[in-house]
Image (cartoon, rainbow, N blue to C red; front, side):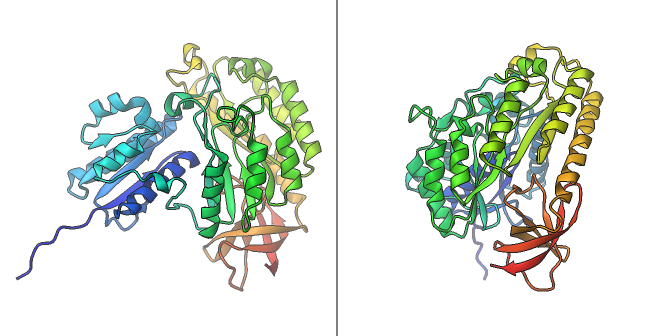
Length: 438
């Protein structure tokens, strides 16, 4: 006679939003695994019985995606496909009471800093000795390293401080230990992330310590690329660039969201910088690190924005010629100082302006890419897809930037570096052929 056995729990974590959320999910996974609980990311097999949705609450589109994902999982639970649905992350931090009232079928909601409480749902203990240990949701050869939490800036459009709190830096020793652990697992590229990289260290060391952290990380044997994301332009510490120039494994790449270029918009956004100061900073950056790749992010349709402001922004882009650029439409977020302003640009107009600005960048990107034809670059192979290999140069971050498409009859090792000669250029991608595997 067959005896009934209890099925072991298996947890699927669904991550929405930014790379900072991804790291949080990886940390949760590591803790669950250490407590002998099966856990997977974005499980396609549907052989799990518990789901944790790690939500984003940054802008309207992200909130809508998060809510739809929660509703999808609740429907699976209603149909008996799941036993439990938990929700965490930024949306849950910001709107917990509303969510509990509107979607009561969720078993529990948690904020962004409530990992120990999530673990209690699984009768699991938070293991302090696992600080820095994560179950990577990324491919084995690259990982994100979150160096701080929260933000002390007061940008008028941004709700991050409402969801993530004030800036809190992680100690250098802890970060170095985590990076060393990642490299031992096969990671070759680490992307430093924070809401505001340049503020790192001010709270715990009483001075900006990003250059010191970079030097310590650059000393790690086997760490080939270190990449910097989300640097605030106001009071930018130029000594970061000295380290970037002097250390071979720090990519000549800087992600510095500027948001706009019209002075009246920068003032209304509370960015603490003028267009002229930004232009001086960009010139200084390029002088200190010749050939650096500059990525920026912009916002279209902030309250009060005029056609003249958009034209000024387009002219700024044409003069500065950023290597990479992304643009969002403004989202009117309650709790921000911008919420007191009249959201006077219709959504359709926001989208039109964003597209207009993006078309300017598209031309710049194509011209810059065409200059690379015939040149040789060190490329990290990320994956094989549709019979071709996709990789990146040091000037490209994963998912948001250009890719190098490689057609090769020989098998190329995923997660390894190859030398590639560029043969074709497109608006946002390149094609090339392998010169030498190394």
